[in-house]
Length: 348
Image (tube, rainbow, N blue to C red; front, side):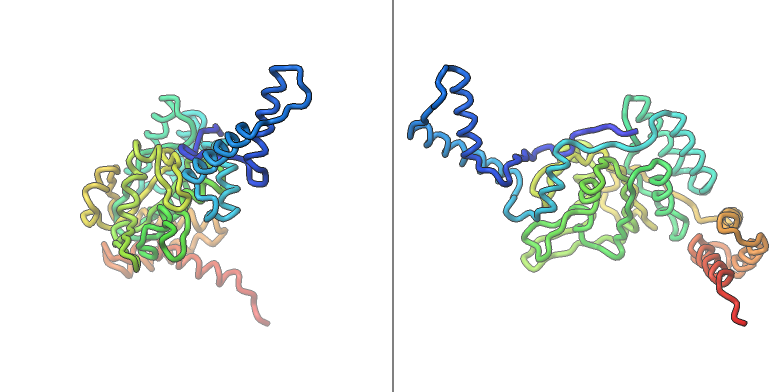
């Protein structure tokens, strides 16, 4: 279901890129005076012209205060102009559709049930209260690597037909990827969530912040600090998210419809202010049964022989319980290798 909602909360976009504000104000005054009398030719006095110039300057000053059009790229201005009419919300339109999504996630990833059940109930409650599209509380998934935390978010996006993205904090420790950067930084850039909303026109994407426990603070050459941890505070707080200041676009957006999933191996490294803004769900390590069930479904999906499942089982038995390699990544890599061999041409 799609529904239009406001996205720009402070920006006033004046569509006067190629027209003079003075000319428009002059034309407006002439039409106004013509409608109040029978005169065809109306001459404006020097006093009128001075007033028009003052009003034009005021309009430009206000506009500059809302968006720095001289420094924004043309494509950025065009995206803001498009978003000024609002963005859409995507996701299930009925509780039955929510139930189908929840059932699919439970079936595909039964070990993630502690998470999927809460998200399923959130989406149901959102629709029951008159909400539109997919919406759930910010959720931190804590568990060992390779249990499918990021995969869950991507599948949720596919099933709900909502855009989804993953930001790996271990590869990008600074906060630029999430909140964007100011013009004082060497290479300014918008945050990926805002950029995705402006590009897709969808206001409730699913954003995954992977391995948030590895986030650190980065300092620029002029002493400015940035961190994913600090940047997320305003985005996860419902009140501040409704009128969130974007450092790149220098205006405010309604980010309260964004769905956040954070993943971590440990949560005790996160500041209390961040943990208090999220629901924390722990997921235990995968059992052999879970890994075999995953392998069976993947073998069927890829059209491979059922005998490969026995091969996977022998592979897993080589690792003791709780070994870090007993995870979905190991199973997926093995299946990828076998699939590549099966597709390899036979040399005669």
